[in-house]
Image 1: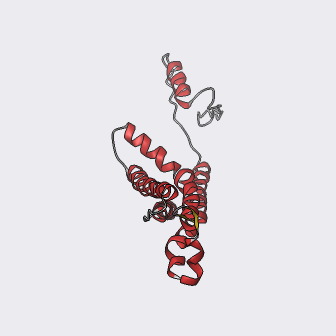
Image 2: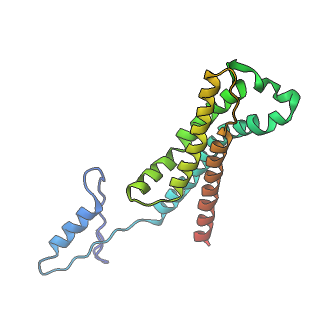
Image 3: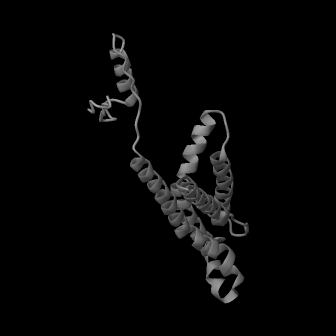
Length: 195
């Protein structure tokens, strides 16, 4: 309590009460002869800490996504173009399911459902509000590529003559590039606000 400037600082546990409740109590107390005003104060140090945590979160998600996406890209686009080095990817595991297709599927799945979870959550909230945002587009595009490729895996597994093209690298690389873009955007916003 600062008597000179007439400021009272209140700490509270957000699990039990919230700032609106405290502001409402102060306004109820001011119905008498004295007038009290209450506002929220957020120290700048916390805002900086939140910004650093957000930058770190996007960076970590991007790097985790790259850990899986780069091998998928190499198995799908680079090694098949280098005949002696990419021949092992054509080894048939069962029926027409090749080792390369199986590895792309296994490596793409964590990117799609662990890293890409944030796009599913964002698109769910946007669709509940009956609007579409970038999360809806990302979830729709990556799901189309992933589930069509999953259909290719199932057909290759069950057929001994089927040949099809999968798009696992499209799904995982799209998520990685969007996370890179979001990371760069957050870093640029931080530098702009600092300036």
